[in-house]
Image 1 (spheres, helix red, strand yellow):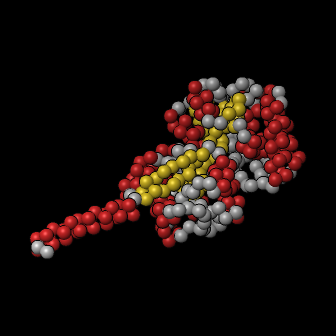
Image 2: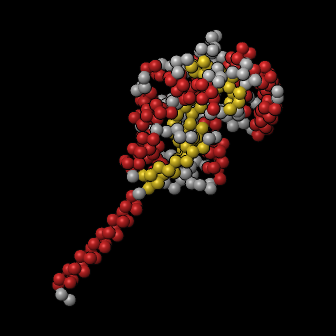
Image 3: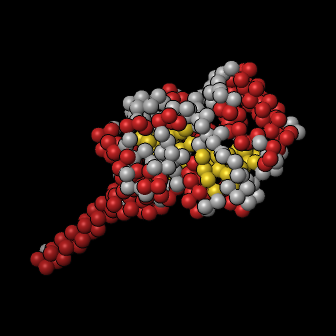
Length: 352
């Protein structure tokens, strides 16, 4: 065979081989990360920066209620690499084998977390979770309408504000507010206490005609349709920052204090990418961006130290110990107690 023809054939082979390997390399480098998030609780620029740094495409699905997330992960119908899990569901999901242990060597930014939010009862050694954000349920009120001091859940039963009170339309939070106002635990298993809270809320329905809802409460108090609302701290603090006539408070009796954490489901397909993502969003720079975007407080102590002084010193954002000690995580209650709460809620909603 002619030498020039041999060289031409060799060159063609080299070109095709190169194309083949380049194609394989690009295919191997491209990855996807499937993230199940509570709403869109993240800063979009953080996702973009992660994708650019690691060449990993983040595909984010969202849910509106933690129980919906639990059912979705439990069904194993869709595989996710990272999921946001609330404190009260964590022990159940660990016990049921729905979450896998995290290799903490791959999450060095865990060291940036405030020790107060690590090693909590729902995951004592943080073997399965990395704190992402925390907050409370409290009260926001319009100072132009409500002139008296607001520091207690009792304000929700003040008849001066008939037709102007907004309550959450779910049994755990609203019965929880009533229980706290009575001096009881959010997690009480005492049927008499549950019944007492029910009667309190039925009287509220009769005497104040409160409005029940969820997300619409944010716009209703902003527009002046209501004067006193139950609200999540992130929305409450954001509204307070935007409207000088609105103020968010955590009642002196205490409230639900919650922590949402990032976890890796047992059937995750890309654990390496999951650990990279969790570590990335846990860095102080990104944690600060996320906190500023969503309004909830950050467990990252270095990020907190970079927030404005008025946020760091706001006792309704970063609570003093004496108030924090009065707050409670929700716990997953036995079936018969859940049923008692639910039946009480049915009675409340059907009352006049």
